[in-house]
Length: 169
Image (tube, rainbow, N blue to C red; front, side, top):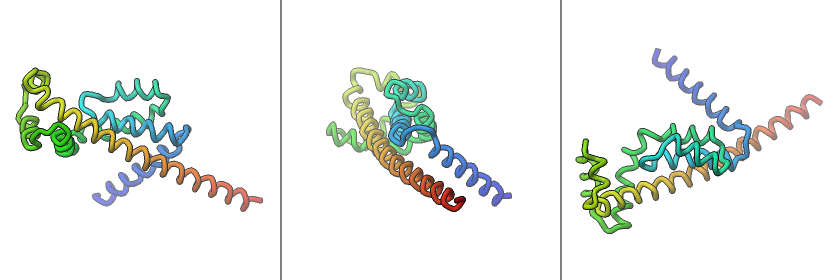
């Protein structure tokens, strides 16, 4: 049963990736849409609505943007937090351990904490800037990787198609 589920999931992922690479748009618009979605998925306070609005305004592929934001939206905060806190602390000259501890201990009063005058410059701004820098770097890597993969995939498909035509003649 386990093998069946694993094989089923592998096939679903392969099918999804084939569809993603065959989106009818330019490689730039697809990669830029996905990178924008990843950026807004990682950046605090943003999400699907902002991604769709900005991708429409910038003429990026909205499907790729939606896939990007959904792929990283919920779980990325916990994975990116240490790096964002470290970069924010480095840029603003703050204590890294204190930023992470204050974030972890905020609990129910989180929104009051991050917008209070006392903690905005000591906690919120460094952490927010760290998230923006990390999200931008990851989005850049996603854009670069995807555009290279899409171009390579399309060249491969095109050469495969031309080879098929030659065989038919």
